[in-house]
Image (cartoon, rainbow over all chains, first blue to last red; front, side, top):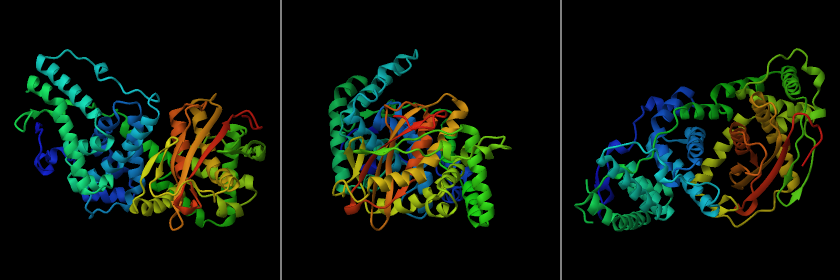
Length: 207
Length: 279
């Protein structure tokens, strides 16, 4: 999925349902509310990739990611009886809200103890022999990751939730317990930073 | 760059979750004691006649005695220390006869609680102080929801995050009170975590320091908001650490006053051979 980098309203860059995670049936969600293990397993299967991706993009490729992901689902399990099936939050948005708060807490902890865990260097990822286009794509991925790493925690969270998980400003505002205008401001600044950092790269590596 | 230049954002790849991630989550849920079958069993036990409950408690104590032969725990609160012998000699080892199997993970909470009640000297203490993990998870869930609804935020502080509206550390929860709650409600669960860890690592032993933070308010009560095992702890078994942490997160306390918090460091010595506390 290609998304334009530029200033525009969030819904214009919303990547659509493909980024919003799988939709679970109401029956499954009711089972989760009743703490039915089979229903909850289905819930975990459906959302594990989204939660994992969010955590990696927010805290980096750290050894804590699996633990944070597990903690996310444990908290979801406990809180499911309070989840309103008819409320404004979709189950995907709801579980991502839990994950993003855990991730932000973890980033604050890491900021205080930077030596407690080292993020895997992107250069250490498996280097599979690939065609030139794939190599360029990997370099682009590194550039995005490095640029995103320069964002503040709040800006990074807003950007990732918007661009990679298709959440609206209102949904992000609820997830981060921030005003919608604050979310818009953070998203504006995040994009401005990425636009600046990726400009040279994009001119040389446009697909 | 302008609006016509596009970026393939998906080039930022993040990999996939571990293939056994789902099983890991479900096992963690079971270990937390929050699965429905355990809850039903608890409810049935609560309705049982007193004589039946006494038998169940004795059996639970016997399982612990047979499995461990007793071990010691030592605790202290941040800023002050207390020490205590919580297990070991208080467990009636002569009741181990006839017990042939060790407890399963999802039964640990009940059996640990039973052992604690036995050590306290009777079932009167059971109803008053020993709540199993599943029940406390439910209680914690009820307390946590109003806290989240009122917008509790957290900020960094000594490894934990703090409620944004808090006025600072509270002092109404005395060390003696916290030690009593930990001794009566948490240590039985920690004991069961240790039992299960010994099944796969029979030589596992050492000092574990558990940090936890109590938050809450007068309306909703006090909960353990965050908990972790300090990195300096001797036991690094991940399943054991998760079990202990989840057990601590299921604890409930009286609320800290003035919407504040209480930070506690509680070291525990796990040793299947020693009956005396060690530090």
